Image (cartoon, rainbow over all chains, first blue to last red; front, top):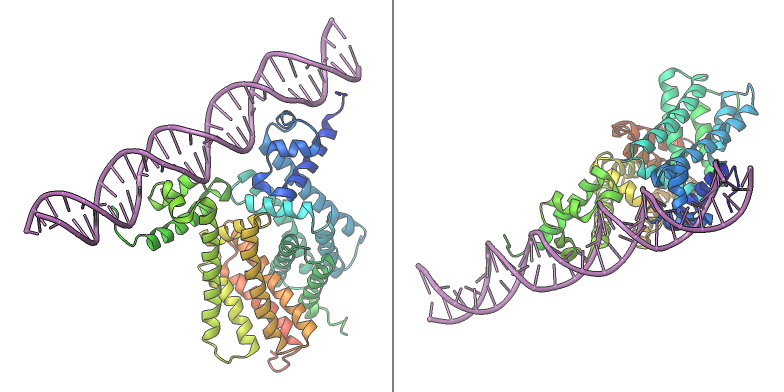
Length: 201
Length: 201
DNA sequence: TTTTATTGATTGAACGTTCAATAAAAAAAT
DNA sequence: ATTTTTTTATTGAACGTTCAATCAATAAAA
């Protein structure tokens, strides 16, 4: 049933189908046939729109990273000129909300994470995202503390976010997103405690 | 060159070769031919000693978990009746020392982590290890604080350890093990600060 | 009638497993 | 001390399967 202008529709369908397939059977068993079946199209269409399976996988990872960036950016935009703590909190929340921490997106994300260790193109995407998070955190901490301590705090909070993410993706029901957010916020409070003597309990 | 008693030697060789292959090209491209080449034996031997590729992969993951458990246990044994803080510190150090956080072991570990999402046998191993870490942490925190807060702290520290591990395995040169240890210890200090007013700076 | 979109059988490459053949070591026999 | 037999360890070519990619055929829309 060919209509004109199918390209963006098919691309979106296939990216969603890729996440669904990876969620279902893992990256290793997410064959083009299975992905195509999820999307309700034939296998050949993947090569047509993405040049091959690798192209589809890269587009899928890119989509996830874009969504993640948007989720963070949207929350920060709502703050305008907020305090460093508010911005850091928004970064945390953006990282945990973005299309749910559990479910297909999270599993796909973790699968790509592992895969990026040996796939240069995915490694590049992963690295860009990683740097963005670190730079954002580091910049906000810098408004409250010396450079080296800001970097230290940024590294710590980035690790905490990743760790909570990992556990969220891995445990059966997923570490409840609420609980993960609270742990990250508590950690942030502790990191800021020495530099914000105003808000003592 | 058949000698008697080769079985334990070959098993060890093949497990090491599996990690080397995964470190080199990733789990997806770690074929039996490549693993066998690393060990300097033929491909057929893998089925002979492990029943098949799956058996070898499971044995490799089991070995990593055993080593990790041993590294933690050894440090804690040296403490005998140490303070909760000392035990928690030992758990952190054990998790970061164990055959280096970077290198083949860490990459293999992360690959299995991702893989365990869709491989029940690996998921079981991963789960046992996870529970052990949480139980150990939780028990030590419990000596200093109420139950719910102890659990909260244990979840936080476990996530922090995992996050640092993940970043260590992923970044090019690996997040320096020293730096990761320091971040984990700093976090531990903060978690304990409210319950150990003795050691103020 | 031309263009755009899609199919699905086919192809070739890659993989894990199997198993008959082989060879070294150990045991038994001379 | 040799030689023969048995046991243990290992090989690697062959087999069957699975997969991604291709492309001629097809069909709807323009």
